[in-house]
Length: 163
Image 1: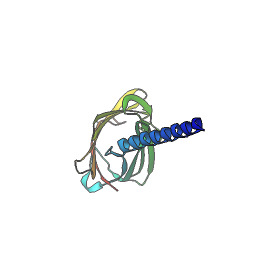
Image 2: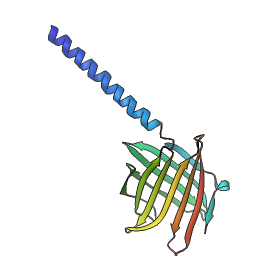
Image 3: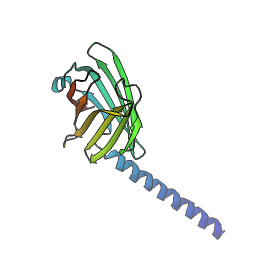
């Protein structure tokens, strides 16, 4: 009888410890200020050489120790564009699906509120993006520099508001 009680107690203790570990992991992911749904504020954004996006919604979800990014955008001419990637934020190239200009992303977590992403096509660096969440947590500013397919310099600042 005593062995059964000890097994039940051990099983209960393991369940409590496992639950606490999950809670700590969930809390750590929940504190990432980039996690959430972000909507483009086109009026506050600038695109050089352009043209700007008509609209965009970026959903950033926790994925293990990293993030999953899903972008649903509409170009100025009305063309829909859906693309994304999943990254541990460890500086390793990961596949980008659905984007016409990029096939990999290399994400580095540079601070609690900032990530740097190097986008490549065929192994060649195309653009570098800095994504920074404001101190109040309501604005995500994405600054992109690089060269487009026509050889023009890209200098875009996209401002998103948390939904």
